[in-house]
Length: 159
Image 1 (cartoon, one colour):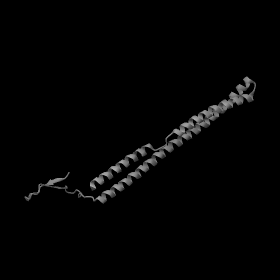
Image 2 (tube, helix red, strand yellow; image 1 turned 90 degrees about the vertical axis):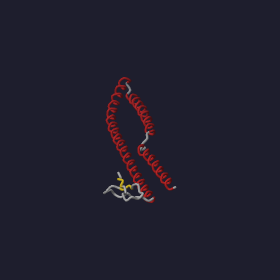
Image 3 (tube, rainbow, N blue to C red; image 1 turned 60 degrees about the vertical axis):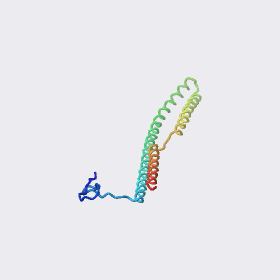
Image 4 (spheres, helix red, strand yellow; image 1 turned 180 degrees about the vertical axis):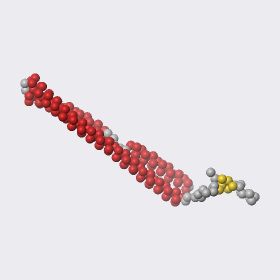
């Protein structure tokens, strides 16, 4: 806090704000300095926002990659089980109908219908998914508003 020193010489100065001893001198910035600082701050802010977006996208890709790998592993394990059950169903239906080729055809068609339905529904879900970096986009919008506000304030100070 600035100390007030009263001049005891008797002139009409009521008091003058003087920075405390050891404090750096207060510096007036020119308009050019203020605009340069605004440009530097804006550039730094944009770089930080880009770094945030990259980080957010990298994290999303990492999560999606891990999930895809686990889906693939689960799919391979499920395939082994499905092949075993398929052999069982073909043998069971073949024994009941006394016609193994027809049993294999029926089991194959049922699997095709189930697999096609699952693939179709999940393909639609994938098309609807959003992979945009929402936080970064929102932050950039806020930064844009801040920069516009700072420019308006600077223009007002000029007039």
